[in-house]
Length: 333
Picture 1: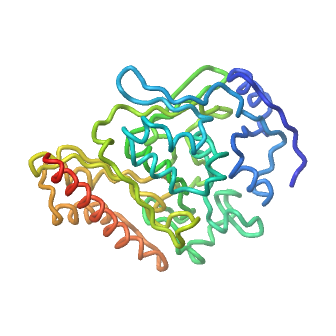
Picture 2: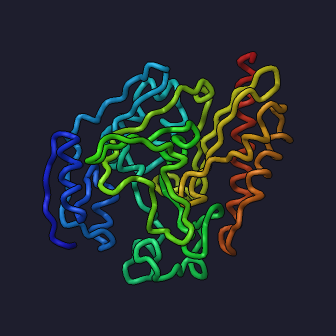
Picture 3: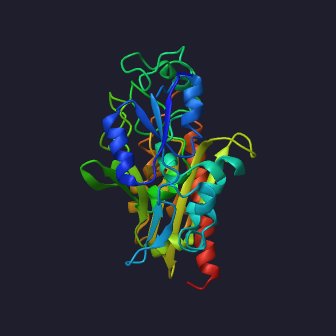
């Protein structure tokens, strides 16, 4: 590991000033991903700027009925918060599906959004990787890609984003807020992650030196009827090979509102807008759910080893929509 400096900051303006003056510095939250990458030699910051003491550790209701979540809120606190569990249950379930209890106690919301891919070629510095070393190649395309992307990939990168939390945030139209030396800003999560294209090393639209200060969840009544489900290779601790956040509001047998987002299938949380469009205003039936899943998955481009993700996602989405529709029916909606 490269020798590095360490500095703890106590206010947001001071944090962004430090990073603005030192492009080789990195913000340190829980460190559950960054420190691992430093040990592997993937990340080599000259200085760590510890932001855990910043006053960004609260979850508050917004005047319009949404939630504002501070960037240093831990994953454990987020998952357990009563308003999150009541109004956005899929978000709580997604966070609990990720990592171990010990890691959730350390990991932060801001850090979760910026965590890097677990593609083996990215984390092995002896291998080529366009995301780690631009222009070096993507051996995953012809090599090991069982867990790689089926949506939005390119010949330059087929890695997937590992976040469970991000999938639920994508389904609920979250907005990321940040601070720079020039002032505050915000990005819709749908614009936060960049398409892979031919520049996979550029992962987000955050300005240089920006500090994530929080996430805002707009009010979404449908989110109260939501679930998150994760498929992984072992139950105890593993990243997803496919996941979905689903919210459904059925009234008199008709889909009144629906949200769908997939995880572990693209370089960013994948909002399934084609499936949503196919469902809205239509019947809440198994046939309609399957047709909607097919509409979304028609755009999938699997590689030889990861074609299993297409039927996996189809079965996952149909099952979750069916369960939520039955729940609405039992509730007399």
